[in-house]
Amino acid sequence: MRNDDTIVAVATPAGVGGIAVLRLSGHDALAIALHHLRPANPDASRPFSLAPRRATYCRFDDLDDLVAVYFPVGYTGQPTVELSCHGSRYVQQALLQALIDSGARLAERGEFTMRAFLNGRLDLSQAEAVADLIDAVTPAQHRLAVSQLRGGYAEQLKTLRSQLVDLTALLELELDFSQEDVQFADRTQLRQLLSTLIARLSTLISSFSAGNALKQGIPVAIVGRPNAGKSSLLNALLADDRAIVSPLPGTTRDTVEELLTIDGLSFRFIDTAGLRSTLDPVEALGVQRSRKAAAQARIILYVHDATTPWADPDLDLDPATQRLIVVLNKSDLTPHCPLPTTNYQLPTAHSPLPLSSLTGAGLDDLRRALVDAAGNPADTDILLSNPRHRDALLRVQQALSAALQGLDDGLPADLLAVDLRDALYHLGTITGQVASSEVLDSVFSRFCIGK
Ligand SMILES: Nc1nc2c(ncn2[C@@H]2O[C@H](COP(=O)(O)OP(=O)(O)OP(=O)(O)O)[C@@H](O)[C@H]2O)c(=O)[nH]1
Ligand SMILES: [Mg+2]
Image 1 (spheres, rainbow, N blue to C red):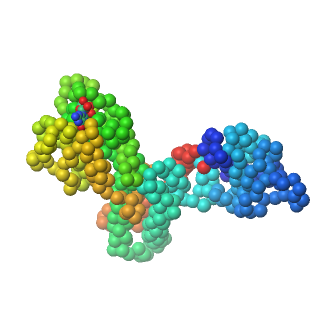
Image 2: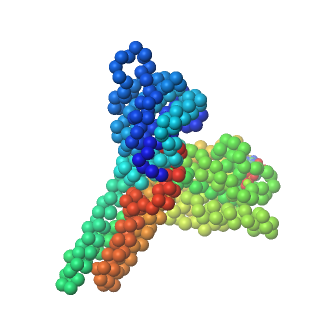
């Protein structure tokens, strides 16, 4: 992809709409647009041009009357013309073709945003936030993307980076004076700073599961004994016949996943095979998947058939990261649900919830409990939600830990500097100060054409 030719694309979604917007950006954007534009009012005597940043109503060849806006420095950091035309498929394609015939090139996926990055208008993490913003469907996802786009997070990384750069420079200065055996970088201070940086990275890295959950939906595994009514509960929550329900135990084999937004939070429900030991090899595979889903979930929804004696959930939960909600299903069949008396580990404040997937009684309580168990991670200041960033931060942390270890072992400055350089490199991949073309390709291929 070249950065200096003029690219064009329809920026609005494919299909028919009231209007559609074409975006033309690059060195010749204005000239190419003016090649086709005339005053809409044929009486106008003044020579025609587009005043910067003003909406101008004009005619595009014989094809359409539209509104054109010229930005001398647009979103891409280059001259840009945006044309709001009538949203017919024919008009969109005809304008596009006309602009291509006069020298523009069809833009690749994300190329406008990539130019914005290459021209220093956005850093890479902000460019990724643009993609997240476009994808956001819940208020929480939107908030997360906006905060990343506005750069709160990029700001933190920048501070981190400049502290590291200073340190590395001091260490490298010592190399120039190696004969004289001087230490510019105070080792105690260095140790302190490294520890602080490592701790800050840990906080950021551990915010990933909350951030990622916001983005992908908080994973909720629906588990329990066969026939407890897990699939019925999923269907009741979705108000849809999504999963197969039958009176035969062992109905669900494969996991069934569905997204559902409750109170602005996105949940990813995973219905699973009933937990039991079985000789059926296919069902056994299903049970394995159930355990895996439970291990990876943030919230475990344990469904118990209230008409049967209580059985402790046969699961290993991590009370630090997982929340358990117990549901006593089929409460329509028993006048009062016998509450479980056994002493199971319950990393949540909730008492078991009587519920009927058949009548819908108790569903509201369950929704409240789910929102409660999800917590409100969006209120914490900065959340890491991008797996690429998490990867890079883990490497930064590794390099800094190596430097700290080296310091304790009394390693010479040049070896310490190697670790710090390594940390700087990985930090730079997040914001794009150092970015290989593979990284750029993979980031921008997430975009649609016209963005
Ligand atoms: N009366 C009543 N019946 C229910 C309720 N929930 C589920 N059932 C019935 O219980 C049976 C089993 O329901 P499923 O939803 O298939 O149970 P499951 O836990 O998914 O079962 P497996 O997939 O086999 O593990 C079906 O006949 C449902 O109609 C309920 O709240 N009340
Ligand atoms: Mg089922």
